[in-house]
Structures are given as C-alpha cells and as structure tokens.
Length: 227
Image (tube, rainbow, N blue to C red; front, side, top):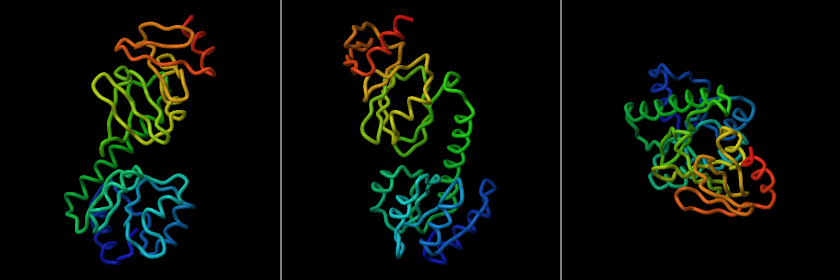
C-alpha cells in the first residue's frame, strides 16, 4: 500500500522476483486498502506512512488484527514510532532489492516460526518466539526466570538478559508450559525451577529476587507448590 504509483510498481516488481511472496492486491488509496484489510486475511503488509486521508499509522491502528507489517517510507524520522507499533521492519525509499529481500526473509522466518508455535501444545514448547530489539528472538523456555507485565508490554528476564516485547501477560501465560510456570501476581509469572524458598505471602528466587504473592493468586500458588 503506497499512494505513489511508481513506488507501488517498484515494490510489486521486487515482490514478483521473490519466490516466497504472492502479491494479493496493491493500493494507492488508503481508504480502499483499509476496507480490503478489514475483510481479507493476509500474512504481510508493505505499508507507506505518508498518505492522504489515512496515514500508515492511522490505518494500522484501525485494524483489530493487523497482519505482519513492513513500513516503506521516504522518512527516516518515523522509525521509533513505527517500532512502537510492533512492525517487523522499516524500509527507507528508495530501497535496494537486497534490502527488500532481507526484510522479506525476516518476515518469512517469523511466519514459519509462528506456524510451528501455533501447532505446539504449551507443555511441549521448548522455546518462545518474540519480537524485540528490532529482531525476531527465539528464547529457550528453560532459560526464562520470570516475566514482568508492563501495561501493553512484557519484560522477559532470562539467565542472560532481559527482553521487552509488545504482548499481554495474560496471553503469554497461555503459551507457557503450565507445569513450568505459575502466575503469582497480576504483574508477574515465574518459573518453578527458579524458586529457592517461599511463604504464603512471598517468593524468593535463586538469584535473590523476591516477589509478593497477589491475594487472588495465593491459593493456587500454595496448592501447586504442595503438589
């Protein structure tokens, strides 16, 4: 989606040269593009930012379940705002075919990993796929110490470092192995393997970090720890 016909033509030519891509539709009108996206499922959207009627940011915010997005723009200064919307990549026009391919390869890898993730049951999962630091990361489940909720973001603390990604703690909890993790507070999920000691009100991890147990999570925590 781009309001410039020439830019659309270049992107379409690049896409047709790329085996992993199938061009479903192209638009130069953002309102028509929005109508199409609201009634059709696609995997990847190449989206300009500066457009009449609806800019790229406004269009994306109107989609309840947006596809994977790569922004294409002539402006460098929108990059930070773009990544706040959890887009996969940010291409600055005019872009080379090699740079385009790099972004598409990243999208292909992410979609493949997401498909694998959807087919796995939580208890069978060995890793967690997230988008963080402008990259796709594959975190080993066994390396996760605890997860901290930060409004619409979560901070995943591992044995090596912490990663911040756009996600809801409640949804992330559903995708973690139930026998390895437990929610102890509205803002915290911890790994059983990291617990060194606990009371009915608090939990202490092996690294010395200590958490209070939320009132509504207390009974479940005690019950599961007894098992």
